[in-house]
Image (cartoon, chains in turn cyan, red):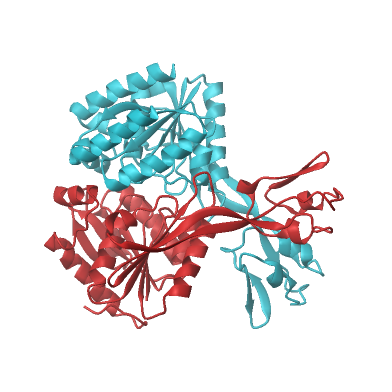
Amino acid sequence: MKEIVVISGKGGTGKTSITASFAVLADRDVVIADCDVDAADMHILMQPENAKSEDFYSGELAVIDQDTCTQCGKCFDVCRFNAIDVNNGIHIVDELSCEGCGYCARVCPVEAITNVPLNVGKWHIANTRFNQPFVHAKLGIGADNSGKLVAQVKNVAKNIAEEYNRPYILVDGSPGVGCPVVSSLSGAHFVILVTEPTVSGLHDLKRVYELVSKFHIKAGCIINKADLNIEKTNEILNFLKEEDIIHLANLPYDEAFTAAMTECKTIVEFDDSIIKETLVQTWENIKQIVG
Amino acid sequence: MKVAIASGKGGTGKTTLSTNLASFLSENNKVVLTDLDVEEPNSGLFLKSELIHSEDKFKMIPEWNKTDCTLCGNCQKVCNYHAVIQLGDMIMVFPELCHSCFACSELCPTNSLPMIPQKMGELKHFKSKNLDFVESRIKIGEEQAVPLIKQTLDYIDENFDDKVIKIYDAPPGTSCPVIEATKDADFVILITEPTPFGLNDVILAIDTMKELKKEFGVVINRCGIGNDDIIKYCDKHNITIIAKIPNQRAIAELYSNGELLWDKIPEVKVELEKIAKYLTAFNINAKPTL
């Protein structure tokens, strides 16, 4: 069983549309994990029917029992996150600022503070309209611990892939280079980097690849909208050569991507154009590469 | 006045709007633009200005000093993040798990875990005429963006008074880095595109702003592609659409080369004027002058 992770550094490069296309092409060989738990979109194209949903608890939140509290202010003094507000002499916890370190509860002289487990989101197992297992999640507003929710989504996907003997797990990763991306990458067999020939596309590709190279994972790159700026596309190609990243494909700047999305379809179902042909060929190549 | 520019989905035009709005407003106002997308800061690619200051940014991490340590195990017990572990006669610290709460350090009976600064990123301050630009970038491998965002906001507060218009380019998403980046803003502009992904993610962003009790409005980018579901949604929920930036290949091409749009594409300038005019209606210090 091979885990293939699609990331981009920069948002809006076509990562999710391309991942969903590969998922369609992989048909029954794949378990899909949408690890963009912050702003997940793949369900719009795959239209999954939920089979099972579960709350996800991670970390803790301080709660002050006002009947016991003597308003001594020790909690306020030790909190490094400015999460204790004082309102008319009453100490209360600012839930968005509290990081659940538990320091306040440990110094409270009258044990007025308890730490309660924090519900940070929900994860779902579902079935796509192609009858594929699809694991996705939604992080609560302003929640921390997205890395742990990503790890949970990936673990569930892995278990399903093992149980049902599916050769591939396809992971739609999150943007940036922070903790959810680190979680997305851990345990991956191959990384697909989706970029675009713009100053920011190249800049973000370089930063996210710096992270990928720390994991020593083999990587390939798809340049989307490649004809938008030939000069920048060439710069990207040079970077790929220097870093020994496999150049998987160039896709043209084509509003058919948006047109397909507007009909809630993947581009490979929508269009019989060069884009479909290229993606079919690219998926075959990826299967060869990961073995 | 503090204006944050955010979006649920990445790649909808946060940086395009931030840089163009900041540059446009700086024609007649003092403006500071801050790139708070510390994981992938891009605003600087579009502004030609001179570096006037840079500094390393640190987070505080405990460091084990074994001389007086009695191996009592208290540090491991009080760390809710499993960042401090006792292994036999050793105390190990995992800096990437540490949230810098200081509990292990300050509750250690022998002061054997002093807090030591560790570099987490870099802040740079650029300037050209009326426009200051500040960005921070997090070190690759560093997982927590929030502390760096906080310190960057502190730098802005220390260096710019309330007569300066402050524009913040926020990170994508709806989780803690976005909350941190929009927390102090007087107004939040949510930028989206008229596609199903754009709609799905802007609804998440709208819910986040409502939860934070923030005043906000929507700007639609790439107007003309996709469908008009976003317009219907905003109408139905009484959400102001402040401006609509058209979809043009010429805009995508200028963007790809790191160029600003407002001085080259008249339709973009018109939309920025609408935003500026909208902002002048607020009763806050340092409103834009047109």
